[in-house]
Length: 610
Ligand code: ADP
Ligand code: ZN
Image (cartoon, rainbow, N blue to C red; front, side):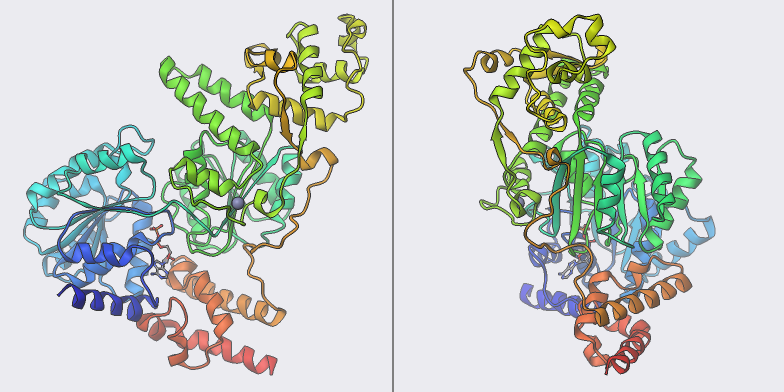
């Protein structure tokens, strides 16, 4: 029986979705829902959670009810499902009463395979009563970590979802999330009152994301150089403040890059418009604070750039996870400098949280900083942080691709520490470096610092390198920068061992201390597919067709076909409908709907190149 239903599931996967195999644990998850069991599904972004509840909803009698907090995305999800030939609809507050009524009618008469509904609407007595009268295939609770009061995505409505088990006994429930540590997992199971759920925990790895971190020297220029490697591609640039979002968006726009700002200070209407353009148009760069993100389901985000440090490893993982959901190569790129460290530490200190909480926040920030400065595989360390150490280096991060050099910085570090000490721990980095380098200024003269034993002792080392040393000492806690006193550098308890010559200090060699950013030695997959000129021409033609169709139908381009599908068309160049069916992501319904138009473009290009 189970075998048969799995075969049916695979046949849907092929005929409707156009995929050859289930990925990872998808088959088991589908089977468990088909067997009527509750489950907890933890899968990284882009892992393929949607299939896990969509296919059982298509196979089981009745409608699959999908609970999601992301009202803005329901339309796209429903549009995409309809193109697979599934009968799908949604119920939420964005609809007119008349529209809602026709969805309700369709549901009542058993005409829906899937219904997306926001939690607050589901929990209304009138909705529950409606469902009492309907056949239900399953409940899928998406973004299930929203039930956790500890997490930053907490939604009060999610707490009410525990009633589903009592009210609809025997209907399988599936809780899905991409972010859940051990504690949150248990919270999900308890608070949703799942019944002996099967747990499916996939690793956290996102192998297609390339990680790179660099010290911040000239943020604007560094960003423009980075963006030059992603021409015409969609991506997100994260900044800490609203003001910076505005100014960076303007600068990029002036440089001819289609960039839009997004932050909580913009009118809701503007935010909506910018989000819609990001989803619907090709190649928009969104410059945003972290207000932008939750549930950005756009599969072809080719990069996430951080111009300022995120708050923690968790935040970093979540934010960069928005890149490359479609499995194609994507970049996570971050630059940071000492000012970021000082500012974030100050934000923690100034927050009104209790001391225990602040200690945790500080430790989290320090972990992230340590990760930024590390010289070994970044992916390994990131995964190890989530208890998911793959046991080997990844070959797709900056450190793997060009081993960073390290150097023994014990002597210079001692010079710096003693200079900080002799100037009275009252001055910021600029002045301390003036003294070390022996540069006379009004301030050095006023304070008679030319007479100090540390005056000019650091002349053998160039200023950028000194800055790199200061940053790394601050990150490692040998020096603190007192944010309340204009960034005055001070010694810490750990400075002593270094000053006395008991500790040695090995630092990362910054590529910028030589003035240039080193190119990775090995080539790596970039976001832009590596195509021959003919292939590139076809790729652009297919994308242009996709955009025309998407505009006609009023949907985002990826609802028509995803990038991975267009790329496979370029590779396979099908010229007949049967061959088109072999393309990754082309199922029967989409073939009927779009096949001929795409085949025409491919055929034209065949003629052109013959
Ligand atoms: P999640 O919700 O876990 O972030 P999605 O369900 O949106 O991920 O799936 C991510 C991408 O992977 C989508 O483009 C989807 O079509 C694709 N995908 C999912 N399952 C498979 C599969 N078995 N084979 C090929 N592609 C798949
Ligand atoms: Zn690596």
